[in-house]
Amino acid sequence: MAQSVNLKPFYIGLAVLVVAGAAAIWWARSSSRDEGPRAVDPIPVSATEFYGYTLGSDSAPVEIVEYSNFGCPWCARFAVLTKPDVRERLINTGMVRWVYRDFLLGDHGAGNLAHEAAACAGEQGLFWPMHDQVFFNQGRWMQDRRPERTFRGYARDIGVDIGQYDDCMDERRYLGRITATRDQGVGLGVQSTPTFIVGGLMVAGAIPYDSLYTLVMRAMPADGQ
Amino acid sequence: MTVAVLSVIGFFISLYLWLWKVGFLGSLACGDGGCETVQLSDYADFLGIPVPFWGMVGYVVMLAVSLGGLQPRWAERREPTLLLLLISGVGIGFTAYLTYLEAFVIHAWCRWCIVSAVIIVLIFMAALAGIRTARRPAEGS
Image (tube, rainbow over all chains, first blue to last red):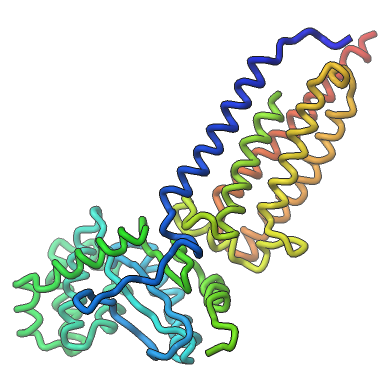
């Protein structure tokens, strides 16, 4: 005959485990409630708000918003390994309009300074060349004791007017705007970098080209327009 | 009992991944984006259904079998344990295939999938131990 084991404590423990699991799922849902494909509202923008640095046609059917930090290794990995393909196959072909938004992080001091340097270059219409310089050389300037000098060198290399750049950096002209962009991202539910918003779906992590392409196809209007 | 506890944990991991896949969750707590890469790959569906859903089904079945095996009617019989061994064995085979895809095809690691893989192996080992334990008295008599 079956052994007379009292299973009641086991069932209670199992029930506690189920409740804990359900609570964990609920917590995950609550902490990201502004993110999922159904939850991300159209990205708010006002006349006074900075929309981001854009690449590609304004009439592209899909827009990808990237929240990124120049000091984040995974952001650099994406910029170096994946972004060239994205530019060639998605942006240059008119399928995608890319929007880059700054996302300052607390533990990447020089990376945060790089955002100011890129913004000052952007003032002269050279954000993207500076973006490439900073990401492609991240391993170098992250070790620098004086990264501001290195950024200044990059600015000179890409043809930035150094006098104007110096004034911009000295005044910390874009720090407030960059911080506001980060706060806007936090408000949308961005928690880490890089984070992408593709047609209402928020995805965190340096996803490869194929994954991004899948998301673009998912976001593409039915008529392809 | 061990299998029931492991099945519940595995079920919630699968549920978590499935809820992300269907858009109920915004982002996965995965660190480096590997989970998203795997979930968005061409291999994220099996027979047209997201892989995590199959995981949920498998864990629910194993939970049901393990709880059934605890009932007085089945407690002394080997069938529930054999069934668990069979299901978890199939699960290991499927998990091995998915792990191969992560390592050599997708080139990204989904940490939650790895945890699930460990759980299915533990369930298999527990079922195996259960079979041996059940066999021992019979051999001794």
